[in-house]
Image (tube, rainbow, N blue to C red; front, side, top):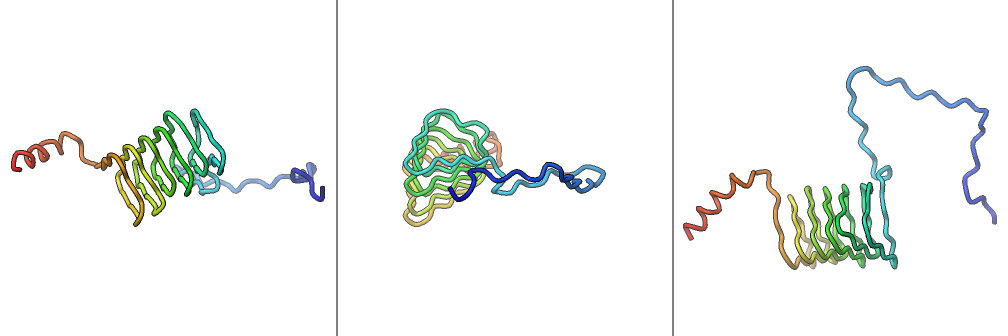
Amino acid sequence: MSRPPFPAPTNPTSTPAMPPARPSGPTRPPSRDLAERRTLVVGRGISVQGTVQDAERLVVEGTVEATMIHATELSIAPGGVFKGEIEVEDAEIAGTIDGTLTARGSLVVRGSGKVLGTARCRRLQVEDGGQITGRVEMISDHPTSDIAPRISNIESVA
């Protein structure tokens, strides 16, 4: 082997650098870089069944079957398959999702993407070639009680 399997330890006798002083007063937590997010990647040819916990970002290149997953971001690559129920902030589908998807933010279905089942989202973008088979529900900022009278009025006029 030409290189060690793990990086060589740093010199233990060196003095660690002091962290920069923090400003006084309330501070906002730093936004987490995409690389710093807790990411689970299910690679091509890999199948996973069960529960996923504490993943902020789920990338599906293989197959995932799960009852309920909460994450910040879902990305299904071309050829990737997700079966089950998932709730995320944003989702990008270039593979296949079969089940129930709730995207509190945006749902993007790429040209190679297929959504089968129920999709709930606030914003929807479907590229040419993208497919949605099933039910689409748009999440709105309006409470259901405000919308119901308008729907009933529309139905009574028709």
